[in-house]
Image (cartoon, rainbow, N blue to C red; front, side, top):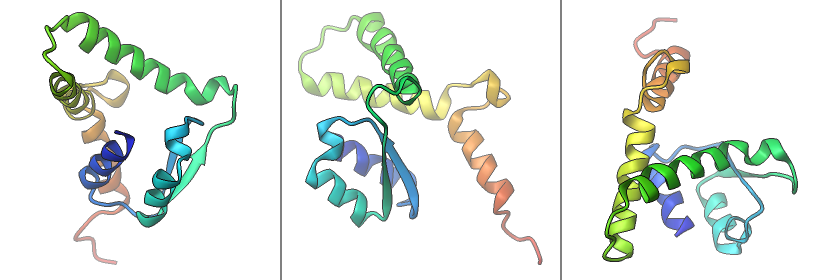
Length: 127
């Protein structure tokens, strides 16, 4: 499942190169297959230290929101794994691409990142 998520992220971001992939010390992220895929995609692995409270704060917050907003709030009559996967995919898409964030000037994280890259690498500028 984590390899599927990595592939989705890679394709959604246009197969970025020379970026850092940060994760916790979960066995799925330290597995040979996963680290080989990171290397093949030219991503540098960064693994947090055990017990580092700052390392997991964001992940724990996002996981808590997911559990509350998708699993508990919807209280859907899941018919199987595919239903949960589809609900998760829809939530992640909303969370990253549609949800506006006050600290980002009331744009989505996706829009904010695009604006950042447009700003540092403007097309059509003459040197």
